[in-house]
Amino acid sequence: MLDPSVTPIFNDTFKLLNDSEVQQMLQSMENIPELYLDSAGSIKAIVFRKAMQQELKYIKQMQDSSSMMPSAAIAEKNIPKNGQLAPSFNVKDIYGKSFSSEELKGKIIVLNFWFVECKPCISEIPDLNELFFRFENNGVVFIAMGLNSKEQMKSFLKNKPFEYHIIANAAAQATSFGVDGFPTSFVINQKGFIHYASVGLGPKNLEKLEAAILECLQ
Image 1 (cartoon, rainbow, N blue to C red):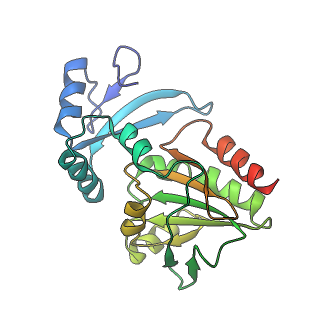
Image 2: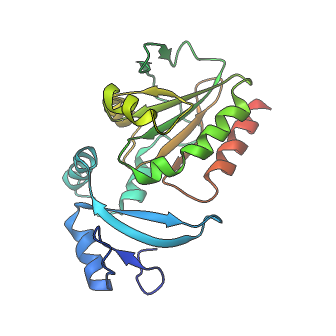
């Protein structure tokens, strides 16, 4: 994917990068590649931006682990696999409503891990809202675990509605679920087991999440 001869790749000032410059960006471990998709979901460009503080924390953890795998592979390795019992959680949303994995047994839980500075996270919100409106009355609970503060979340939501129950300061929950990349989504079945997990933004994310929910509803 990160091949400038195939897909144009830019830095944060939108300078077109060659292969050597792309490798330097990757080696610095301080830059995050973001994908820009067209309406059909095809990748049209990649832009490197400076990593946010929370992302730098995860990058440091990856460096300390001495693993040389790409971040997406690390994320796939660390998150609970399908069929595994989901980590427990007990949280409150930004309006004070409590959500406990134990109390939600018997319901399907859709979790999304994100933060407001994450452009791929923001890009998928309309699709996630569509998913919410389709299944909200089918015993499905939608929870967005965000890394930002309550104040940052509320300010963001004034201009960008997100229909999930929004949890602030959810870094501990992200760590519990092994989340190293954003956005990450999980579908947890009625018995509390992981039914589906995805890392990153892809053209078929909505389709796959919808299929996973329907499988749990059968």
